[in-house]
Length: 119
Length: 259
Image (tube, rainbow over all chains, first blue to last red; front, side, top):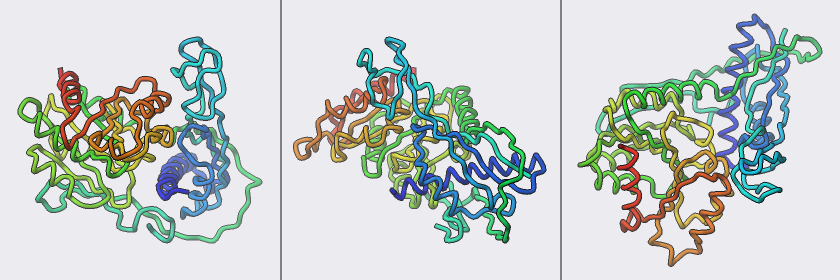
């Protein structure tokens, strides 16, 4: 893994934990069991690096046993020329119907805290 | 890096300095080192839907910056690239050519050192240096603080020279009017496909150091092709900040966006 990549995921984890902590405290939770995230294949996040960062980030009592569950959202695009919808793995796949490169990303760029499981 | 949690150092202070001054404004990141033993038990618990974008806070602040810039008719350019692409030299040359006609100012971002802001200061426009410590990108809150300290005038062009990094800055909206990705011909013409997110989120692509083309295997047309695949709407300027070749088109564009 690039050092830049790891630093980046640590920074993302800090943001995730801040969101989870704020919501958990508002709900008067004592413990967070699980953090569920929607992360798109084109979000720019390396899933392994994120899991590594979550594991190795120190957390307080509220968060320290929270298990990270990642929903990997596959990427889909819609061609702006011919309106065909198709699955993509990267930003540079041509439309399989008309072979052009101008498309709208329908899904795959998500980086969301979807839900938390608390007590 | 902190050996307890891997984040920034315990005294991770982000500083905002104008050339020649001591630290005045400090932005501290809170850092919690509590540690407790706890028994694992995931079988209980109720699920609460949250549905919040991780970069929500930054995105909200970025939009606020955007509104501020629009209200004051400031054109903000977020200059992103790998380290060593020639961003600072490009800015120096641009400033020296345009400062008599346009109101210009600069926010410099680096982990450490005042070197870049000192160079801009010598070119004769207002500048402030953000040192991020271990941080690898600028974010919207840093820009908000820097803009207030710099006292950016209405009707200006504000250049934000981001930390040299093609990975992290792509996710952090600063509230800029345009994002400008700078690559140099010494970096390989396939740069765009290696860093797709950065090219996908940029508006302008500058290909710098074209004076070195005779000495490197860089195909400008191939590079543009790769970049256009990541982003159909990219506009290109191929130039040499050092020799001045191609700079006229860049200056033309800067004058045009100011209208």
